[in-house]
Structure formats: C-alpha cells, structure tokens
Amino acid sequence: MIISCPQAQRQAGEKGCEYSSELALLLVHGVLHLAGYDHLEEDEAREMQSLERYALDRVFPAQAVRP
Image (cartoon, rainbow, N blue to C red; front, side, top):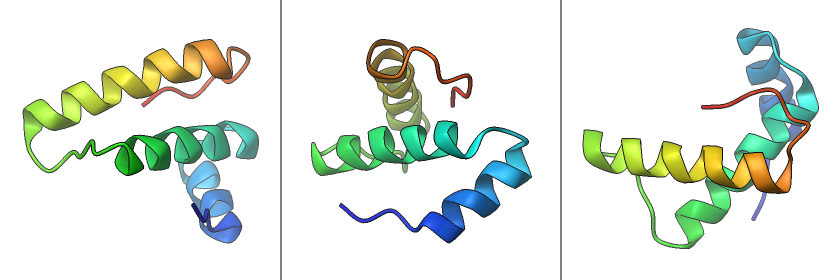
C-alpha cells in the first residue's frame, strides 16, 4: 500500500488534525479496502467507518481523529 505523504499533510491541515492521525486513518482505510471493504453505498460507508473506528481505537489509541 502507498500513502501520499503530501496529500496526507494537506488533508490533516484541512481537517485541523495531527499529521500522524491522518496517516493512521489512511493506513487503516487502505487496509480495509485491500480486505474488500468499500464505501460507495451508504450502508457500506457506515460499516467501513465503524471498522475504521474500531481499528483506530485498538491499534492507534492515542490518535484523536476518527472518521
């Protein structure tokens, strides 16, 4: 998986969050895509966001940003 660091920095600035928090979110989000999850439909988006929160809370508990 590849994460664009400049894009992550821009997104962090737009969201007003820490760069490390945005990187954590992008990492989890990307892994979920690789595992077959998507967010094209509203119900898919809710499920994916729920899994993102779950993973971030357990893997990166110090990260403040949640989708």
